[in-house]
Image (cartoon, rainbow, N blue to C red; front, top):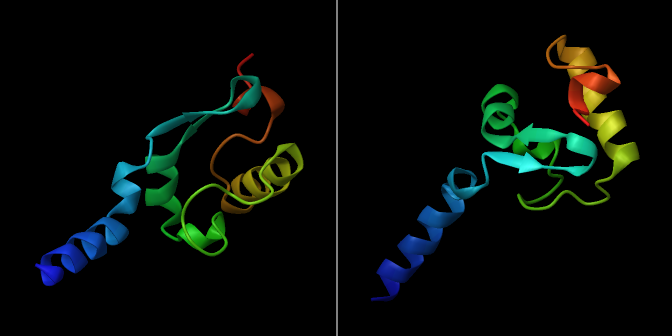
Length: 87
């Protein structure tokens, strides 16, 4: 029985991103497509320092530096205000 419980928790830990919301509504009309970003970036630690879950210190300054910075660096994704903010 213990083997099955351990296997279940291991499976959930490995597939955790599959259960994450696909589209996350953030402030000021920003819609974040988690699945699309996780497929493109393919490295959870780029945004989630440590373990997956909420991003520590997430807010306007973090998003403008990290999100906009990554879009600029990768030459993919919006970098203008209206590119992310649809309100």
